[in-house]
Image (tube, rainbow, N blue to C red; front, top):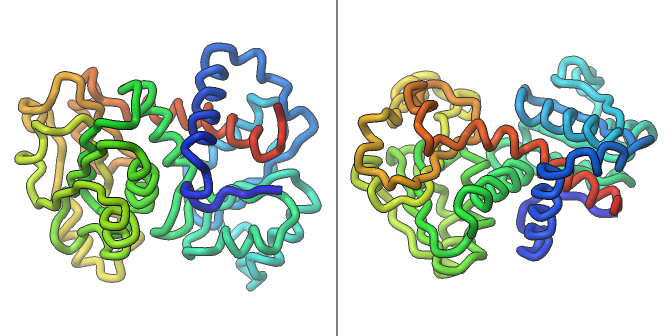
Length: 304
């Protein structure tokens, strides 16, 4: 029995296999319509989510399986003080696999240690979001055709952005990848990410406050929102929330084949005018998320 808590638990070869299966699902959806018949996915979402939760549910339904669960902590027994360990142990008697989101870092790991069925980390605080990273990797592969020889700009909240931390970790395993880290000083990438990933793996990276200066050299621009829920101080959030807003004007110096990505939801960091640009890939990411989660559910359930 295997869970997925951190993207680093998957080897590059396993990621390639998942992407190959996701590509096949896109081309031949009917082939997969009954793969998980009789199987149940429990979605335990202790924190709000639209795309991730619905994507998991759609994935399981499209595989012919069933879904049960809850979409907020208040509608579960955790509101009465039940521990994560007790919740997942209980749910494991009703389901074959669990997708879990929790505001506390490490909660899905605790769940996996107290459960006899696979746990998929659907986001834990500012720490990890491996299925978003798989979604991002599928999108990069479909848009760029490769993972090596790319310059990726990460822009916005690099301090609390779990999607950023996960994707940096995943992309650091490929050759000749350069990273440009664009953020206000208060939201810079944490030192532990620099030390344990970028420095340790010898990844070339630069830090800057200026999106305009970085734009022309990027193959991929990964935008993020400044997350109100990660701030203790409302004034700090208000001061930093509009630090970077991507507009058609700012894209004038960008490459013609730039891939603009965003894990969503967006607030105002990408102007809706950019949606019409052929380089905008963030709604393609949403679509890709379902297919890669289908591939992952099958893998963890041992379905061929």
